Length: 387
Image (cartoon, rainbow, N blue to C red; front, side, top):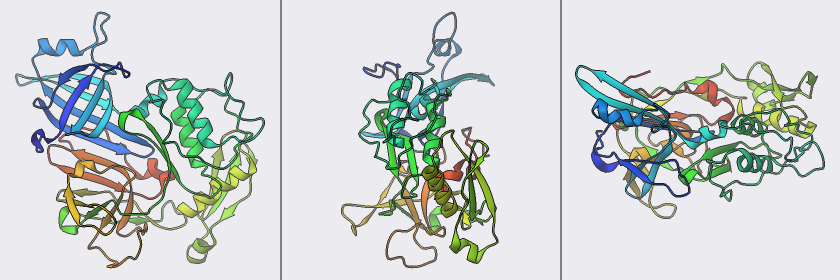
């Protein structure tokens, strides 16, 4: 790695309550790369370990032995956790007399696709009242996600009563969480879910109260800012099954742009209030051309030290995460009285990809969690290969 020994890579067994260190790999790892994302948290991580075939044999599953699959991987900078997840794929590579193992790991968000959840035998969300999204998420994690930390104190409360929602069809908690958050809340806010340090779940409302990271143009590689209207939609029609709801429009957008319609499908049993929440949020988030172009940071990044108004200090770019706010400081407009997502120079980070070989961070800036799957090309980390 170009970053040398500042990043430390370790592998533990899969006993998450009392993990045992299996391998200290810091001095043996090359081609380290990792991502963060929303929804999700820690995304993917990949690295290469040079070793003889006979040593690699113990890493692979064979003859009833599990190998290293689903063991825990951590990347630290001193005491600071930079990435955490579990091993999903192990590749033995032999070429030109060079022998190595390539390890591919995924963050614990992927554990939300291990087991199915159904309301059958659990809470009946179609009856009674007082069923908020955070209640449903907590139950799914408790019942079907044993690899996720049971500490749910970082799951913030939502407000909209989702009574009527029929979740009896078996589905992965990850799928349900994405559905629930897309429906927004009674204040039409945008919510994000992530599994961060120590596998703890976080449910947070998007709020831009400060700029987390500052970067200057000279530290960027080939900056392009693309404001695309391809997905601009200012008239949103919700559907539940084949039942049509009430169209919600964005008046400000309609005064500037052509009427562009879209229909959205909500989960079975979604009530009228929830339909309105989703349609209103969608029309707000998609009512204007938004920044969609990723950019790379090869130079320095800065963070405010201490209280607001403190001095800017340079920090390693690998500390940047999805959910942070980044500002290109010397890009127009020159002044801004308060932190604000402006689609020009101040962005909510939806996805990061750090390349340890080059010490380069790729940022996907996008304020719209709802269209992340379309705005971001899902990264299959191939260290040294540009996609």
